[in-house]
Length: 215
Image (cartoon, rainbow, N blue to C red; front, top):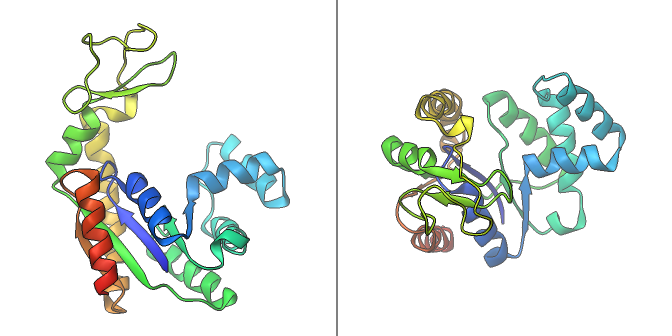
């Protein structure tokens, strides 16, 4: 299957992408991974990306489209993929259309994971990380044994700047404005599949699996 996976920050896209990858035996294509790998490889596209990132700018849509096209030509993506993080705008929907047309393939579904905003704010604002070893905790869902201290190395845990409630709500506002027209575009083609993103990761995965099988 060839799937676009969408959902607000904190809804669990990454976790579900990995489970779907294993279940469907397809590639998990993450835009973040693509950018890091392109820079590391030092290809022509990678050098362009490095220059953009070092300048603190956003990667232009067309460059991102070229990177996506290059990634989807790789062997592991030929039989299917889960595209995570692209498209993020209506313009990028058109760019992806062009990439897929050149590859001679088409999307099977655009999955939209949905959850109440307050739940997402609670998930993200409760996250705490260890600045030394990188371990991740949650004040409610996965608290450390000793409050505010990493179980592994004893370092004081911190809240990332982008996990504060104000920043999270700003990100969600941007997400809503960008994603609504994308969802409409795929819904008009009969490709959009909406799924409840609340509950345990396994419960969400079971919904996805059943829904895709029925589709």
